[in-house]
Length: 617
Image (cartoon, rainbow, N blue to C red; front, side):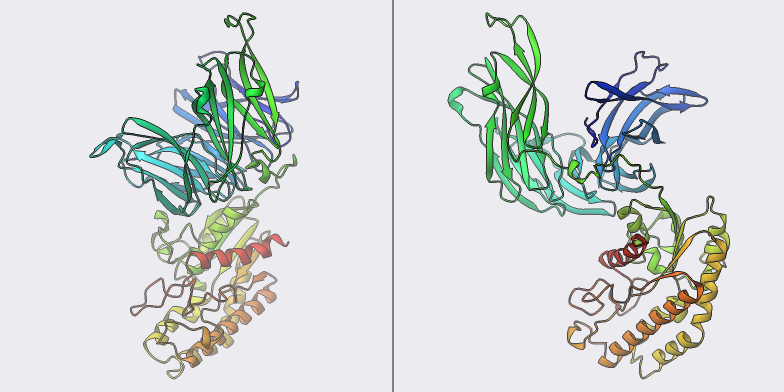
């Protein structure tokens, strides 16, 4: 592989099969050896060499790889990072369920589980930041996986037991589809509408989606079909790829299909013709939106007699490189051969992803900010299952904004997600729902201490859930529910918030404390209100006034405690509860834990507001 800094990097296999010699990652600048790095795993006290491995360039400019070895301790797998400039080992993440790297994206790596049923997300510091199950049932098997620069994983799934028969079909695979995932779960699905059993060829993913080259075999004949699917699983186009210039008796062998951020799809095929005495490399470029041909050329002008192109190629900006095996015998009988590297200029050609997203810097990334998320349901992710199995009744979700913050910002490493649904201020210092106190027990016990602590708290002390229920079932203005809440916010809550913030500061004295507020849940204008017959104009305006009062009280308490405050009061603007496109769960006739909590889009909006404040310092 070629790194962002122009190094040619590869793995030298270990010279002995007994595990005594490690495989070595070596980097060259031109012909000059720049550095080497042996890679091994540890079994007991003895290092055991990795038997084989793979390398990928990371979006931070460094080198990342995966390798495995069989040891007395069992099967060992390791994901590792290496500095592109010095060869220093950045991390080695040993895991029994890592079988290989799917690819790199902006924030880290996607690693395939050894069992083949899912993927792991790892940041560029070697930390696990998420897991996603790819298969939905035991009968499914991922044949191909690809990740785009935004972290969307495209999985081609087939039937684990293989194809079967079906009327009017030569072969039939009951599981035959593309599923798309990100770290939060499935984002889309496209079922392939082919009766026959298709063979998927090499592929790469771009921000706009993934191109797939299928060899569809049916009724004794086969055709190459090119399709493109976006990150939501929507089909962009499908087209049959013709075999060009049949007059020369050409035979095509697909090599790869690649994508770039500009919307180009490049299809490469190995071609033999003239009764298999000549070879070339066919390169066709298509539009990713329509599948219309953009460009086509081959390398036949560079051919020299009989021989065969290999599948070794590279697409650089404006140039195609191909490794060719050429016959050197003057009589053409091809008793001797030579391997040559040929190149061909082609303006506009070049696969720029993930390379276009590289920082192109050899400077090491700063140390991650270790973060702890405290508070209530607005930080736990209530309303967005599945919840962590270990979170009991606290309903901590992968879609919670603190978790999304750690995914989207490489500088943030969430070391503990302690927020609990229903928590009041007392939960910071007392047991709640069977869990130890968030601050005085759990935060205090963390070693090393975190650099950043985030907190949402106070909403349950005011009784927001109870208030929404009152407003739904009766008139919460006339029954003075809102008046009592306003009195509590003005008289009691400020002192309790100040004490809570001071407790956090005392417990984590070297951490930056970021207090996050609550959003306004109802439209600012009565004319924007939809579908909520229970909500009177007076209730809407008074509920919004209550949210503004809460925002002001929290801001003032944060200022007195000298901690950072992030207002998200208007983060749902245009998408409030009772709007045409809400980012909030409906109240519902029977209420429930979801009422008034953000949908995934709402969690994203809060995460964006917090990230802007964190990144600004």
